Length: 137
Image (tube, rainbow, N blue to C red; front, side, top):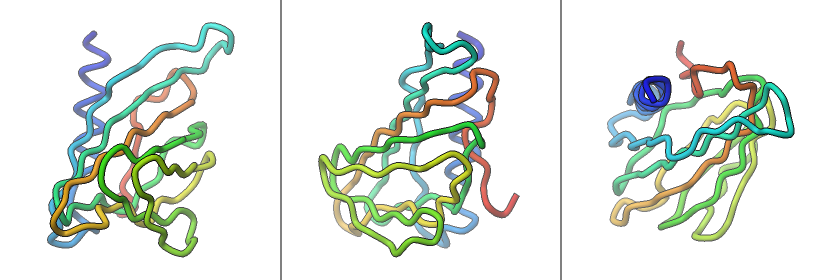
């Protein structure tokens, strides 16, 4: 339980620092699931909920090199760019993936008037403690 709390706090602190997000409000990040994969020794599934206020954004970042990430928009619309791809707006029910070692250059609410939420599912090495590293670190 203490490990989960530490992960949640560490992820929130490192993922929502407004450094490269300018004056946009940062997102709120909550770890909602963390469980080892019983049929894949050394791997775990972690799920986070990212909530953006209107106009909110996260700074550019990377994730652990072992992390494969599948993200689905639950509410509103999210603007994203991974590995220098053109920015794309994802709406409710749409998804994107981040391959291991990817650079997430843009992650932002596409609206300045409505909130947005996404769920990100991480499959990664169980010993990973930090889920995100800001690009400026």
